[in-house]
Amino acid sequence: MRVVVQGPGSLGSLVGGLLAAAGEDVVLLGRPDSDHLDRVAAEGLVVEHSDGSQTTTHPATATDPAVVADADLVVVCVKSYDTESAAEGLSGHVDGTDPPAVLSLQNGLGNVETLAESIPTGVVLAGTTTNGAVREAPGVVRHAGEGETTVGRYAGESDAFVREVADTLSAAGLGASVTDDPQRAVWTKVLVNAGINAATALARVPNGALVEQETGERLLERAVEEGASVARAEDVDVPDDVVERARGVAEQTASNHSSMRQDLERGSRTEVEALHGALADRAHEHGVDAPVNQTLADLVRLAERGEN
Image (cartoon, rainbow, N blue to C red):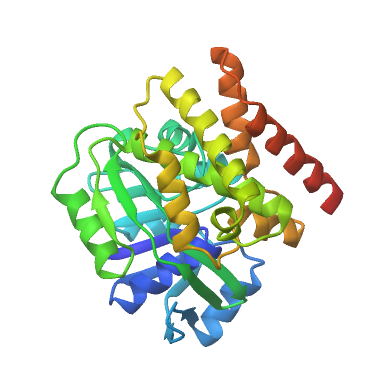
């Protein structure tokens, strides 16, 4: 399968590196001024595995979205605030009689809807993953925690191609399965992130601290339960055990630094608006109380301003 990974940050690089190691034809699509892409082009992409071993592959690199026209699958891993521009870049190249499928493996709410505004709805796949990734240096990414991945069609029923995508991701070590309810899967992932991201970013602790300390347990539980109330107000049937799922992800990725923590430590913009901010906004729309998520969102916004 020819796969273009759009947004080769931590997760995108992990996905691309694992797929390349599994024998897939991979292209990393990023910005022209990327030291990371330059290093990959010159020396290859190193994936550091959880058992301490390393794999070096040599995926192609590109900066022009036109490269997706020859792909079977585009995996979108850009930050949520870049989804609109990424979709616009894809729009002129995802058409014709045999367009590539476009799979979002992003964090937050609203990404697949934004993609579907610019490209044909029928090619959009909604996905989630709880695999942890940390980009250690240009050209080097660490698989910081094994997790589960889901894939499903945004509109319509999943078919043989969706199953092929899931099988391809699984063969690469990403533990993928097909879901017939991708909205539920996306919301579940958002709630897991709500339990982990802001708290670990603000406290500067690894994910495991949230299940090792009583204070962390309280924050995780309250943030997730609030988010679940918002989901149900939007008629999304999230799992009853979603708090336990968030705890499980924190345990599986215990040594990982959440993406939001990585962003704050780099002085970069975070995805708080698509996570805690979106939950707080939707809670307000539905008359649901979400003081923990509102406070976490405001604290991350304040920290962002302080880092800049």
